[in-house]
Figure 1 (tube, one colour):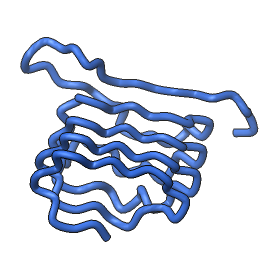
Figure 2 (cartoon, one colour; figure 1 turned 60 degrees about the vertical axis):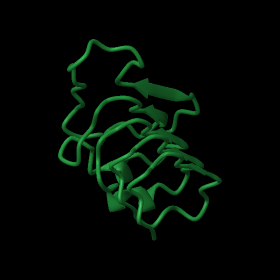
Figure 3 (cartoon, one colour; figure 1 turned 30 degrees about the vertical axis):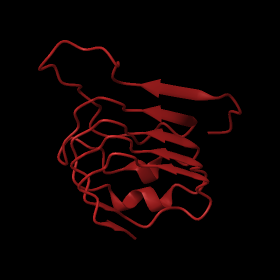
Figure 4 (cartoon, helix red, strand yellow; figure 1 turned 60 degrees about the horizontal axis):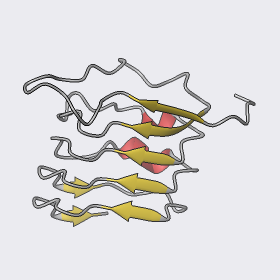
Length: 118
């Protein structure tokens, strides 16, 4: 985990055949040098959204735009280096848990079901 290189992983593309889904690894642990994670447009539901975001100590940018989950994992609060969180068009999102203190950018337009930000 001592590498200073920037690592980015994108699991889903913006253009996918209708009805297709994105398969994510069962766990995100071991990706300690990952600085940006793009899960945009993956059609992720609550049970498909990773619960171990907290195991990504170098993560600075998290893009979860256009997904179908109702709530985010509380493990997001453990991302001490997270600076940017994108939740645009997550129309089913109802609540956002406690966020890291160093978060600079939170974008959540068109989250029409959003009721609470902790």
